[in-house]
Image (cartoon, rainbow, N blue to C red; front, side):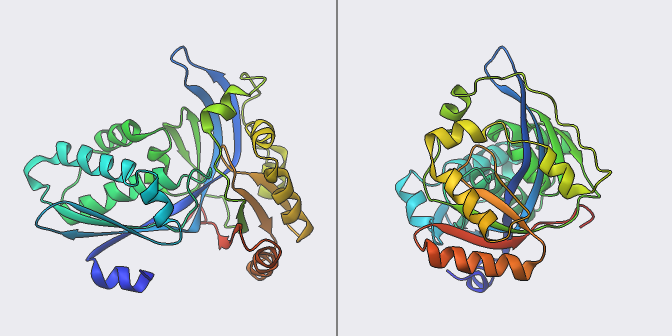
Length: 294
């Protein structure tokens, strides 16, 4: 279903923007097994899209490039969990709903697709059901769905610490022209963490005297080396981005998506087109990230 068709067919629509980890430092591990992280996060002007419509009975449908893959993978998981948790919280206001997910982002790709979908479901259903929850209640509900959901609920540049729940907005982070690149190989997040050789790494410290790009380049993604062991194509795709003129390239989250930052959107679009010609079986998307003041 094209985006304009989704807007026509469903009265309420929500964007589920791709979450980009510009930096990810693993700083420790809690007794319950959760890893402590420092993350610099931004959101892209591309992603999945959800539509919401009153219905006689609950329904869930899928479309988009990766919709079929998600359907074969058990599909609705986080979207339906978000619906059910919110319904439990708001009670009688929560009438039956048809939710449609246009799945444009690769599955299990390190750019928060499922978490962004869950956050968009919370936002969309609150609009459809005409209800609001206290900020603290909504944040706690989001965290029940997953560590990335609270930041996806924000969908603006931020630093997240702890397991992802301690959020600090970054209003001066600029927009970046970017290419997202994925070899369409899933990466097991638990296996990436298991392969970490050091789990008490230095915390994220951003020194911006030379500008944001230099500060990001000086940071790290501690999950990239173990992810490259599991999926060697990550190293290949990073080199391809740099060969096409990226000012820097890095893996996002636990992979396998990498991002390349370009000087202009025109350069990013040219790079994405060239990369797609090289590897038409992989995923390449030129996009721009959301500035902090948006």
